[in-house]
Image (cartoon, rainbow, N blue to C red; front, top):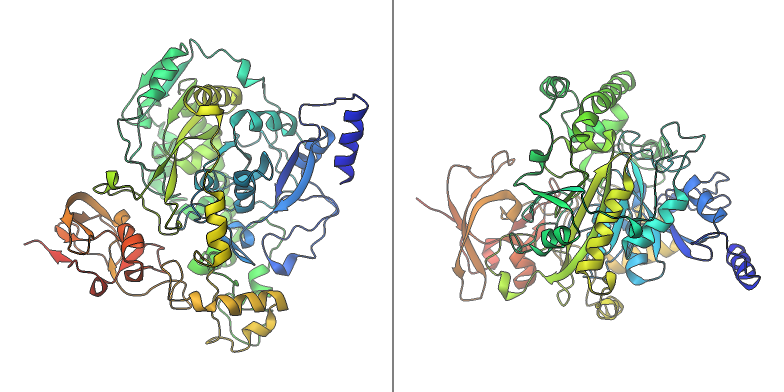
Length: 600
């Protein structure tokens, strides 16, 4: 409050030190703020008061901005719940972290901006933690190239790919805060000063802009695909009206030079071939968390204070066992891997990115989704801006034969997703991505920004209990007294929510965090999908084939008839559950009037 009072005094005296003077903002709870706790979404760290501070916070405060609160994160930054349960999107009532298992950890920042509590909030992206909350909440985000924002005193998940960013309702709000927060700091040797100017005053006429309509791009994070392939020509038309030289391609990779031999050799070697090889796990200043606080596979009698997270979605690393890979890795081998990854990123991927047009515009996820090794693009450096162009209803009858994303977690009365536009520019040219997305937001979005019209509907559904995604773990089979190790308020909350287990599709019946049976009927398992009709109960059924490489999956050479799990989320929710091993949906065909059959 002292900072806010100081801003008021300056306003009263006619003193203006910056464009963000007196403007409130939220700070993701992995960033240090001197004199306050950095809890990393864990009740075990609520007393972790620090005296260090992130330069992003310091620079904003020096410019007169008001830090309003620390925004919630999942435990140790990967998941969709904190120690008090799920954090909800105010656009669709689903997870604020993104649909399904997207795991965008900036859950509190996204929800706060969506609700209008603050115009801007700090986020941070390793894989999806700014972009997933942006689409989940129908808001904008900016993820600058690695090094533009200092990472000093920020609980990093990955030294190689973590990028601080901002969530906002409109691009210009992000741009103003970016201008005051950017720059070098002594504690981050990778931080750099880069040129920047007001993107609203930049003339983009004559710029080369690559464009690809990749509206059907699926993958992680989820729910970016839309049924509007070939129908969003207004984006290209708007760019042409602004005088840009638009280069339309089928695939984003067509905009880049061919990979140099160094990159080919690296990929052929298999070094870093697993996705977690470029996630160097925990630089969160909480080393030993799993060994000393969680029994990460050990038994009773360890020094741990509890067994595992409180809620499903609180920490995906625990669910899928990836934390064990971190703990058991050879430090020397891992450092070698990181060195090689960084070297190839700088010497091979960075030159490839310089062959891009001034800006690349598309409809898919960050880092030129699907073009090349996207993890390496993060390390080499690219600026990404996402804006919502419009909202659309995923369960509208118009899209009945569309086999794309129909997320399982949305509230049944607000099954709404955002159709996003992505603008990306080269490492040392951030203003270009800002400027193009700003112009598109002004040209295509009424009022220059979208605001969820469903806030009150979702709020009432949460208050009444009609919509509830909280899913507590039941560790009683491992530790009968596990509840006694929780603080009283968490113990009471977990007890009140235990009835959700096995009764809603997002809350499994087993301690493993999901269902263990059912047929692989998640649309993401399938190819060659054709809508055939509806059953007497109104359930759509399709012919399809399964993709290759599905563990214990059906023969990919054969054709089947059956349902899509995403359709059943609304039509027959008791027939759907999420599997613990892969996070994908399974269907119990005994509970619907559609049969799963192989076509001879």
